[in-house]
Length: 536
Image (cartoon, rainbow, N blue to C red; front, side, top):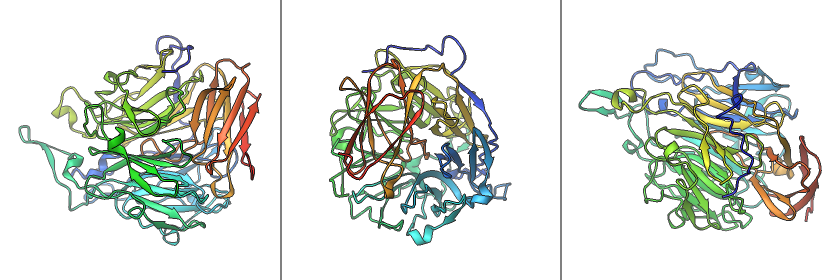
């Protein structure tokens, strides 16, 4: 285990590390519940941080629900886009043309046509939507032209170059075969309390792998390329990363109540599921857990990307240590996450260095599924406090306590929205306002890295950034799309510097496998690294 010896102990002394602010964001999520316990009312929705207008700060897209049969509210509540104007947010939904009114779930961003502007993909219960960024502040719906055919229950999504041809492909996780006419009622026969069912009441849906044909038009090729289909595919969280260090992108999917998936890339965009053999499919007891959110981070600085998944109550959030690509070890207890994560229902999650001391801390959004849970189980609550875990000197994570009021939280996305080097957090809540948590932790030295990739992958999704001091790896981060729970975070990397005088070299392995090395003396600012034609 590797963490900094510098520990702030913010939980014990001083001001809270995060402070809720509004900054002009007036969005309220609605699940449009009707009293009929429609299963889609339980999932909430995601959020996306992306710089859609290229002005150097992160803008925010928020996803909303839709009216269900019998709902007392019948007027749709569209998704909203907020433009970041120097730390204040302005609603530009109408101008931008992205106010989708579908049954919103998740969202991710990527430049699908290589025109230099980040586009927007939204998953729905129903038709998924792809918005093309025109570059003038507006978007156009190109779902049909792009070949997007998702009409089931889309959840998590992620962009990345999966077949090695330079452009961005798209992986979409799908959940279960719920419909308004296929909506079983569950609950307690003794108390006669009716509640939402668990995912075991439904068959799963196959995920979708869209291969980009080079101009932003996609063809779904999941089955041909090895993506498993069947009743056990109940996907929520998905991330693309090089988990076996062979310079191509693999796929990891958190499934709800069934075996997770680890699709290893053969280098040509074809995949083999290694979840069972590797140990990532189940916990250390060999049990499938209720996979919700997912995050990646090299928690022990060994140069291999580790995986954490959030789960249901009385299951732990599970940390899988990557033992050189083909074996994953359940290290939940060893890293201090077992007891602290057993009671809540975890959803969105993210590794990031909130206090800029050089190591990876962890945040988790919590909230129960059942709105009647307090009548069924006196030890549980519907609204739950979110959790912030700080990395200690011995590598374990310590829960800093309830730092937010209990809410029914779902999505969690991180971004340095005010460009001060302190990573902030956006949390979505069911039937409530979102929480923008501004990072007010004590200032420490830092370095921000923004990569500019090739024409067809400007955001450089799939790149790996290694921070070296005296030829030794001190931190490794990936540039990723999607993740958490149906969310998309700021792709820029913020690295905390305990010793600002250290001679630092940043090594970039670009999505095409080429590498570049960059001695960097700048501190407390963002540095842009551009890919050259032949960086090697």
